[in-house]
Image 1 (cartoon, rainbow, N blue to C red):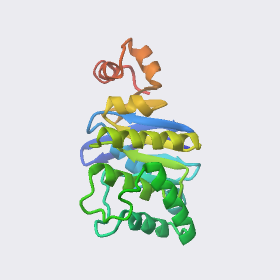
Image 2: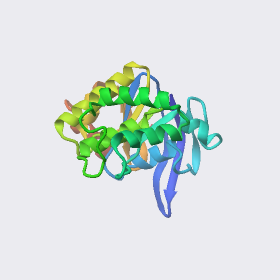
Image 3: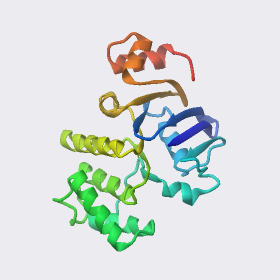
Image 4: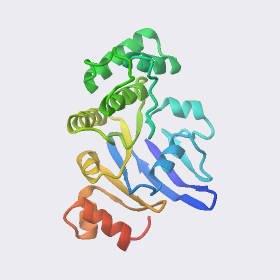
Length: 243
């Protein structure tokens, strides 16, 4: 479970995040939905301790990453907004390298890699060097690399950005399976269709603030709209009150 308590962050005179609060429980997909520049990525970076909140607190399964960063990170698998694969390594070698960084045994890395290859359907390119990979192939390798240590909490920043239909469906199926395993999944997106397809709980973030939350149906009921896009536009332009 990921708990976020009134976190804030400014860059110079720009306050990117303004007291964001929410809880992402286990066995659920929680989405941060917002336009580019709304504060989604900054919020996620504070959650996985790439940057430190100026105020507020984050708890990862009860662990404060500011106080126990290594312990908190061991409970997280993170797909950041930049994928950053090692192009001279094969997909398998990229995954194995991260397994070793997490202190996993060779046997455990081999077993976990085999499971991820099957779940993400990477059989055709697992032993190819990643230089020249398609966007979909890069994302799948980056997800596998992030989750090789089988963390309880999964954070994904725009996981399907730029993917084709088949790759997108593959990532969705994988997230559904992880949710059924009891994992906490938190992801950000500005794509309405993506949020609608996979989310149990949607947090609408606008101008650094969570301004509405609930299931898709609850947001439709709150706004009186019949689709998520119209509900989102109504919330961020007309306002539904800040939480």
